[in-house]
Image (cartoon, rainbow, N blue to C red):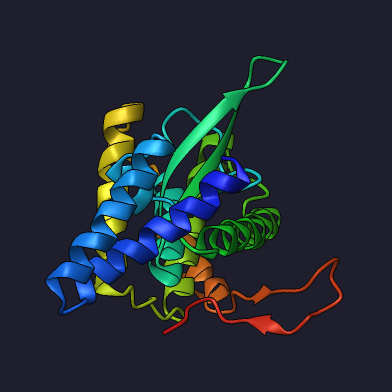
Amino acid sequence: MSINRDKYLTKIKKLLRLAKGTSSPEEAANAMAKAQAYMREYNLSAADVEFSGITEADSSGAPSNAQRSPIYMHALIDLICKSFGVECYVTGKYRHSRSLKRFVRFYAPGQRAEVAAYAFDVLSRQMMQARKEYQVKHCKRCKPATRIARGDQFCEGWVYGASQVVKPFAIPPGEKGVIERYAAKLREDRGLKDGVGREAKACRGSDNAISAGFSEGTGAQLHHGVNGQNNQPLAIGRS
């Protein structure tokens, strides 16, 4: 989008707020007429104006690249969405090797999508590292299928543990409606559908795996800063 178009989108939004908020019918009509003139000049629809404040941001990857994502990945996504007041969808692209690389595209007004994508990457790495350490310690003699199942159960417990230290973001009522309409537009334009996660397979030792994951998940942390220069914890949730 050009700088001029962005500038006039901002003007249009101000004029529409004025038209809605003024007590003067004449001032409201004048503001609305100017807004409509700008929209015609730059070929902007009402949806363009309403959604201009929404940004999208992609995670660098995902805990699983499977066609059908595991339940624990859906749970982590849901945790991030509630924590930062965003919505998202899982997508992917095929690499030169023809293997699928999954990532999550978050969207929300302002810069929350970018922060959510960062948080998802950080927590994904923490979870998968904890999973690996658990498997090394407790799954040495397991069959491959059991090792995977216990790892999946561990991750489900990990996300549940992390959810205990998260505060949901209180989305302003006006923003909530905009996000919902944007989501509906994405469904219509891109054919998005609700995904059904793959459940972890039942296995011997699953209860212990879930319990161990929960314990590890309650210690989940986020850090912010550029190039690692700031190591202060960043709250997972905000209110």
